[in-house]
Length: 251
Length: 78
Image (tube, rainbow over all chains, first blue to last red; front, side, top):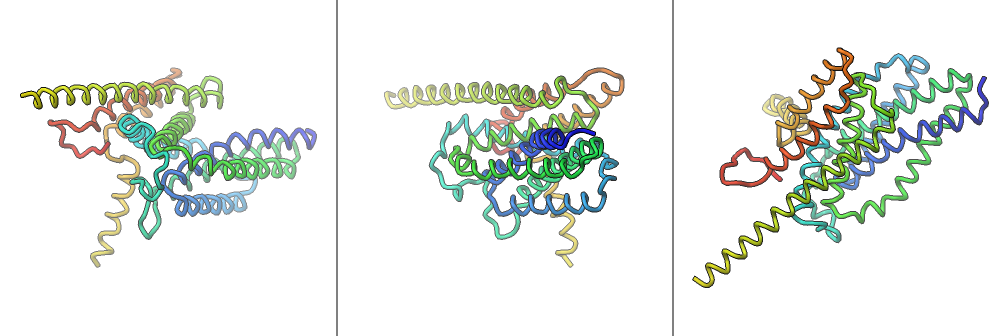
């Protein structure tokens, strides 16, 4: 039987990786679309997660995580690409405009009276999928080591600690320019979406979870190259517009 | 009555806008990439690189499609 401390630390670290993904999505969506519907979606995700975990218990490991990863990953990937493209075009057009802009002036922020279903669904899916993965880690580590109690403490502590760090970073996230924030969240959703969708298909990523930083770097580079190309186009158009203005003026 | 009939349409429209958005070519390319990866994976071909390549290409294509131009009338918003 493995020691309590070993199970506690191992479960904490493994669950923390999943919790970081969960908190990244919730904080990113909340900062971009507004908090009310994001918090409602995350809360609903935790509620469904609690029902699934309590209802299934040890049978949790029988839930087909592969198809779930494929569906959630594909949806996040396609949705993330929309924000990826909008972020590129906005940052290219406006630079880091919006640094001091009010969140209420942003066209992406929901101002209707009802629920913003986009924010709700994104937060719900992020919490449910990552929460299920934390639950799998807890059940598999805890059951195999014969230390379920320690595994539960490690898993819950990871979610609480990473969640607290996310809440502490909210003010810093709110200072990020709105156009840049949309690009950052789009790139992150595209990264996690690519990773989960292919894992769901059964593809083995080189380096396992270590492939995530590699994917992120490739997509950040893609964003930078596209922004550079678009900004050059904007400057060239501005220069030719200026020349035609001068020609017209002298004519 | 009209509300009852329109509710499924509103629901379907929400999911279409949510998943597909304003550029259907991106969703189509990703779907094709996932199917192709699944087929290659079944034939024991390591194809983890295919979808990221499609993503990188489609970002460029989608940015170009979003540009306003004299011959573009498909309603894409930047």
